[in-house]
Length: 188
Image (cartoon, rainbow, N blue to C red; front, side):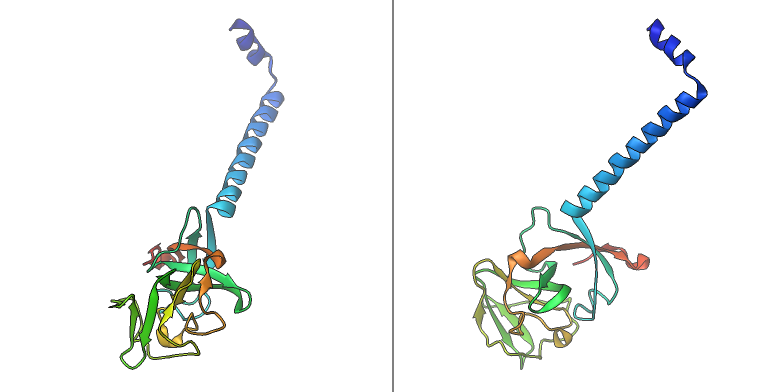
């Protein structure tokens, strides 16, 4: 105990400064490594491009996305990529998962999953726009069926080039909007 106190007393101010500087540098590096690991393995920040998710999300919204222990579920808003469809990530809502049968009545504007009409308070207007996919469709194993909330202004699984999306293309689930600051919060 006496030796430690004597050693501390013998340290010059310059030696104490270098020791403290080293401690700060070490703490900074550990913090930086932790932040990098979190953003590589747990969460990402991804921006919305376009209006396919209006009114839920707007063009240029910034989203916090996670794929940690995630399996897509109906109603989730997800970020996905499909190079053959679009090179940048896209935002869509999961409407049906593997084994579900989806049908769309474009005249009535309704979406039906497994015989039940979905109550979709989040959409901009009824679903009247069709593309080149015929309905009803059953979602294959390992896939999801996605649509934008702006149904008549969204290119989604109704369009053959996107079609059923392999779950391996899902980057993650949207946790919350982080920008613009006046709209920060959970997204559903």
